[in-house]
Image (cartoon, rainbow, N blue to C red):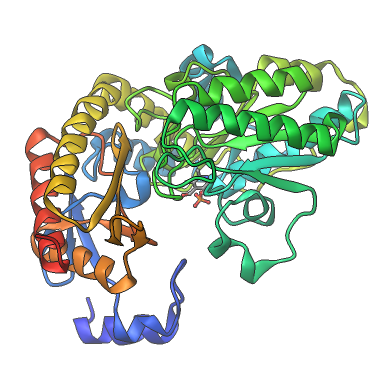
Amino acid sequence: MRETNFLIENNARYLWHPMAHPAEMQAHPPRIVNAAEGVEIVDVHGKKVLDAVGGLWNVNLGYSCGPVKKAIRDQLDELPYYSTFRGTTNSPLIELSYELAEWFKEDGLTRSFYTSGGSDSVETCLRLARQYHKINGQPERTKFIALKKGYHGTHFGGASVNGNQNFRRNYEPLLPGVFHLPAPWTYRNPFGTSDGAEIAAAIGRLFEEEIAFQGADTIAALIVEPVLGAGGVIVPHATFLPLMREICDRHGILLIADEVITAFGRTGAWTGSRLWGVKPDLMSTAKAITNGYFPFGAVMISEKVAEVFESNRNAVGTIGHGYTYSGHPVGAAAALAMLKETKRLNVAANAAARGEELLRGLDNLENKHELVGDVRGKGLMCALELVSNREKKTPAGKEVLQKVQDVAYDAGVLVRTSGPNVILSPPLVITAQDVGRIVDALDAGLAAAGGR
Ligand code: PLP
């Protein structure tokens, strides 16, 4: 391997990073990750740290998941690629479709359509939603409703339904006909209350108003994350998603659950929709579907939507959408192994138990450090929102967040920051001891950044 200085210099010179300013790379070179084992990563200097980011919300089973690695190697030997465009398919993908139908049966989702990642899955959901209405004789249903603070990837469709300006402004104009409702957020919202049930009801009223204003017959779908992830881990009240489902049903609007983060146990339930007792019409998945070891995604389709597509014999029912890597056999083999390991290890139960411990630890940090304005989480997706003034809820600055992250890293834990939030999404196989390490490292980071 080349020497460290060569890597740092040439990373800055030649490589543009997602979600980063190219000019930042000299001043704040990214950490070069060279190896990983269990729930830890090893940087170019040989330093081992606990990965409380879990790759990017995706390495649910950690970095040493033998069965997934073996499935990938074996499949590369057997059939490294073939397309699934009309006329060909492959065996691991058929087996995976069978297993996913079992996995998502309780959510009412039995058909699958494959993609290369989360943004592709979101794009697929948006397109299938529009096509569903066209087949159904309602071609004017083309609009989408989404939530502010929602994150749905970076394709033009996904960016259009994204609810954060950082992902929108530089790329406008985006899709016309997209409207946003406030997030079900107790800490900051326009309703003057922190009562989750009241907030849910208020958003429901705004949704109804928007439907009346736009005309229900023009709206294709509502897209929501069951727990908003990248927007800062916003956990809705238990009444929120059932209310959205009920309103959608009353107006013939499809409900798309974007479960790219939540589909395989991260919230402590097997799916985010199940967490709230809701059955979506379409669901986007990706990330942990291969434990992060191979780029892959699946859109899960309800019987209701499937029935409309499958009973239609006209050209409008043909799915004019798909990717070269839709249904990649190596991804399918990895996903099959992931499902088996995920079930065997019952990681959702561990996510729920460790998540409660983590939340308790973070609550203690809130009591101890003025810098912590809010603590949120469900299962193993948690966030600390940092503020420079608690009364005024003034978001903490970038330097404060950087300091917390750097000191936590020195203390042996990698955390992620996004805006004023410290985001935690560790592998779902962490132990109670790992939870302690995360809390201790954050304690050190917050103390150094100005907490008491
Ligand atoms: N949807 C959600 C809810 C996500 O969290 C993400 C990524 O974080 C995406 C979509 C986009 O996925 P990808 O980055 O794999 O394209």
